[in-house]
Image 1 (cartoon, chains in turn green, brown):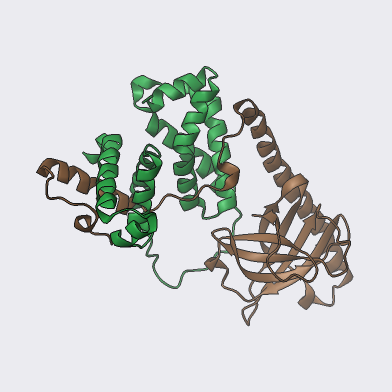
Image 2: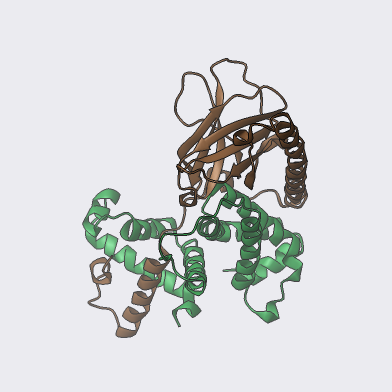
Length: 177
Length: 201
């Protein structure tokens, strides 16, 4: 598999297919990051477009000797999203009635990075593995119900889930510590 | 929360591999589900067009900022004239505490001026909209909404436009900090569902 860094370098040279591969890998993580930060789908869509316009424009500034591509892409996305957040309309402020229960900035940053990497890794899975992970983790269905839904034996669901987790572990590599 | 042991048969797994998969399991739970990509984002913009397209985005911002300045000047003139003409009627004076710019396609824009909340909990507002199409049908109108995560939650008032720039006074009793945006929708006649968005913050 071509690394993110290689794709960024090829995009810097005007390679459209490399740019499209980056888009396929990162459109969803960028959109997820933007949604969490901006809380508005329309503005998040704009942020995705701006992020990829920035990637295309500034790919030449990526230096592979300073690290892999994912953190560089994350930084470009964050800049585009923060830029859009700054332009956000200011609603009238009122003093909150109680302390905010939301996580603090460092927790949010950690959470954003984890989601970014995991959602990016999911893009690497074959469709049938991605599907079983989505159903198993986020649909609210039990494994038996997932089996019924997909029309496959329960054992196959478990085997496929395990294969998907192993595949994700390979992609996430360094993230697993 | 999903239990790893319910999802995977661990009987024949090496302990090291099981640990690795459990770590992925934890990361999946921490990350949450990836968002559904809107249809508009299913394919990338043409990279050759992506760069020029950033110009309109910047232009739009500058134009929106310029529009705010122009509208502020217009409002100042409007408010000055209003105050001058109604100097004995101070209860009608509108003093904006916050201005919320909105923008839409094809140069449409608006500013919501929000005054201090009154004694009984209403937020007086003055919305100035420009560039919206005048309604051909007498029962068509526009609707201002407060939104949460991009979705309209509570209506803030309906209006029709009658000129290039239209000013309408509205008032809402909501706790504004519970919401994080505004939209204006175009409401066709005889249809009370939420119409297409023409302006957003």
